[in-house]
Image (cartoon, rainbow, N blue to C red; front, side, top):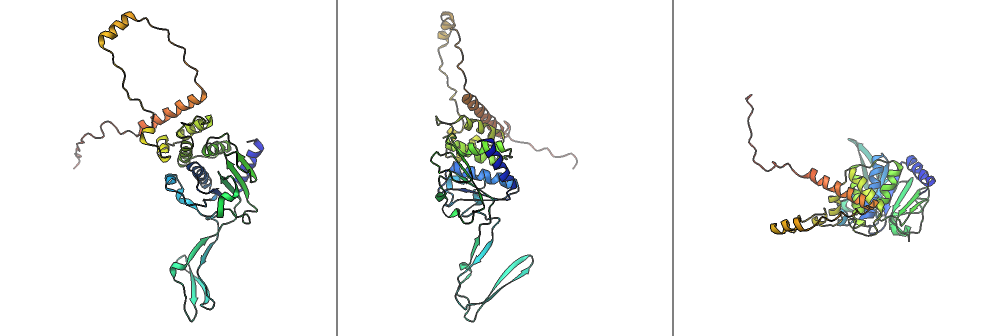
Length: 328
């Protein structure tokens, strides 16, 4: 991304008060985690922000922070509230309101024949307020947003298109599409860090969850070096790799690389004979370590450090003897 695009995006966010974040139908964990990470970042910036999906989030996404804030439409916090109910000609005499104890009471006065509807027929509809900017995450085309996107309501809205799929139609006013990223979460993490935005623990965890899921816990051979780099930074920000593996559906055995600790034992007399007979061989030159391997080692060290911090003290399970105070 060139500096002009970066500056334009930063200026757009700074001057925008109402921001929307949307994903397409049936979003992956990586897509939803990216969207919720942006939602949390803008929320911490005191913006009016909403996050929406045209389909209900599935159970596999339930571990993401903020998943309960996903709506079926945009602009929920800044939009109007409409109270709707069935209407038949002549059954309503008038509609009025009163204010009591800081509460607004809407009064629907029935006509001579009474009201034909009951309380369960009343609907509360949160309208989409005017958005200054809309971030669309992982959607190849606007039609993927279903009813979430309304072209008439977003005529004055700046559209930011973020995707790592080369088939993306590159719609929008600011297009951030590149297939060089293994995951959307590493792309979003790199973007917000470049913009200088603060990433808290919850945001870091969401982003790490998405990276772990998209790279199959870094087992994919095409995992980018940026994915490793961002993972290390996010873990330093407080994200847990173990939690991310579980969130992506991994088993406990996959959380940490483990060694069995078993080594082949030789008879003691054989070992003595080998000491006398076998001449020491020159040590081979160490193989060069790639940047990706260095980051992988750093991630493993961070994971092991976090695991050690979570272990209870060795005397945790030993019986404790309470000694009363001598002041009584």
